[in-house]
Length: 249
Image 1 (cartoon, rainbow, N blue to C red):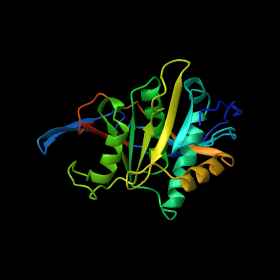
Image 2: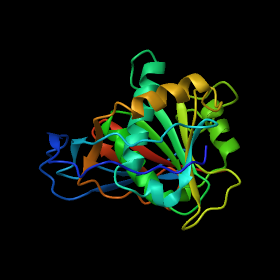
Image 3: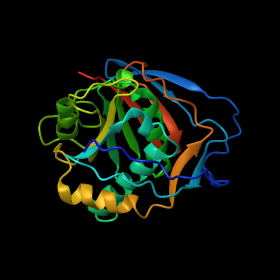
Image 4: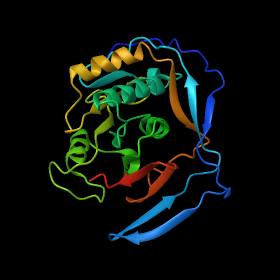
């Protein structure tokens, strides 16, 4: 699915904002605690973080191929491109989950060019949409088979066997064997609740969502996540949404 597309999105108008946190503390506090033999660091929500509902316009050409969408990286870097695709993906996953927001999602990539920037954008969209637990491997890098294993096996405390996993899906940033870098390929795939690549029914529904999308949700005034933080570090993006850095191995 390596066709190119042109972004027809226009500059968004002023966002409709809903205040998420209005704490009296004006600084970001870090609380370190020892537990389970590993260092856990939790950051509280920064004052002024808000959920923004951002108007957007349809971007043509987002039909996924095998479980995801592959384009030149400069296409993904275009205005609202990642945002439109991920919002459509979230909406599709909610429909597939009986209309209920997903609880836990893994976000990881193969480390190619634009990996970390896309992860920051995706985490904000997931949190703004109400996903409670966002698991990101240290440095943002994890192989596609490992993402599948995390979905199938990982419990909230980091243990588990096949079938014990609590994640309901995984967003994988990869263009498979295609080269990465400026002028080269970038892609986003989705793995469903058993760790399997999204099937055609899911990807076609996702494509239909992209053709009707008029807005997406994201966080404003949210600090970037330190992707190189130790495994076990937690970032409280909203009062109800937490990013956890997990062991990539």
